[in-house]
Amino acid sequence: MTDNLILMLNPKDNVAVARVDILPGTEVGGVSAGQHIPAGHKIALGPIAAGEPVRKYDQIIGFAEGDIAAGDHVHTHNCVFAMFERDYAIGKDVKPVDFVPEAERATFDGYRRDNGKAATRNYIGILTSVNCSATVARYVADQFRHPEALADFPNVDGVVALTHGTGCGMASDGEGMRMLSRTFAGYARHPNFAGILFIGLGCEAAQLGMMMEVEGLKPGPLLHMFTIQDSGGTTQTVKKGVELVKEMLPHANRFRREPISASELVLGLECGGSDAYSGISANPGLGAAADLLVRHGGTACLGETPEIYGAEHLLTRRAVSEEVAQKLITKIHWWEDYVAKNNGSMDNNPSPGNKAGGLTTILEKSLGAAAKGGTTNLCDVYSYGEKITSKGFVFMDTPGYDPVSVTGFVAGGANVVCFTTGRGSVFGCKPVPSIKLATNSAMYGRMSDDMDINCGQVVDGEKSVQEMGEEIFRYILDVASGKPSCSERLGFGDDEFLPWQIGAVM
Image 1: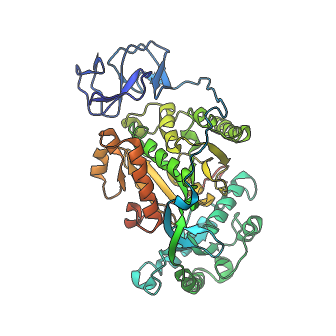
Image 2: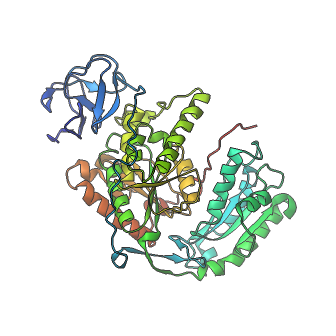
Image 3: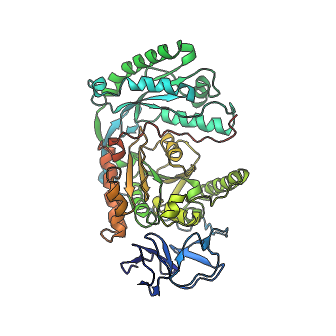
């Protein structure tokens, strides 16, 4: 419901969201505003007694810290996080999916690799096992940055060095190293790379030979592995890398785009720099697009486990089996333990920017974030960077930190990413295109160079969530077919490779 000044998201809610700044004394929703209510923030639609739940989306987003009067501004000063029992109701909301017949499914123009996989971009990648080889990797990639360097290879999108800050000062076995190894392998196998160089230093904990053996990667004409120490130092390693890239370029250039079914798209669902409109416009709009992709036989992957905390019961209700639901619940418990061991709280999120945008607790943020996952059945749950093999809607255990989360999606096989933002995050993730979805028209107007689609049209009453989803879905197909996203035009993506680092840094 709206009276032009507020948005009431469910008739059972006891708060509404301000569409615009509301001045004290303004009559909205049957109450008089007691204070200034900033745009995106919440106003109490009636009295809420101390200790009573604050409800939005017909879900608990927090509890009144003291008595809240009708018309009061409801935010961090009077609404607090607290634990409460959630009914996981496993499988209760599972329903048949209305799949589009194969002959009628949407297509995109992608690259078909020799192994049958579908790619949306055509890069040569240079990956580093350790921070110590990052500079050398960039030196190699720098030789191919100028347009004339690739003039004879018009079908190649570029040569990209993906460097990171870990790979040593960590245990050479255990969970952290397994996660790093799995991430490397996922990128090495990613169809958006026509060829890969792995460059190490030589003495690091993350030994290239060991990781390749564990992950079943075989060196060959399109997958090279070498170290600076064995290659004769920086200058000789750069020369070697440049020559190997030159050898791979003709192979990469022979690929041409061709029609491929949308069923071969794996869409990563990310949000960052969120505001109160995220759960009203961009996230449910993206959820509607994810539902469309699933109906066309594709895969949509939600993540950011700390940012679905408090909303996980909405996902377990859609789990296709007890096993799938328990996978998610186990991940939630792991995070509770992980945060407690580090003397933290699951409610140390939202960030300051989120709070400025009207988000009060992790519960409120999570309910909005979970909307990116649409409404179809939860088919599987994956560990960070694990290869995504299921079709349909799935979940991957990732942190909420955007570059780390998306790195996990890409390692798992995502070949397109949609990223919703209310405050205005700037982001890219080579070798995969990232599509930016603005939650509100004001930010879209300020940052239109960075934003691909204005989902603020939902808040403005110009489009329904379903209409927004259709627009996003069609845009995904266009970008998968080669249309540059805003972040690609701006050159983002070289510095956002950030594997999740857990465990002691020694």
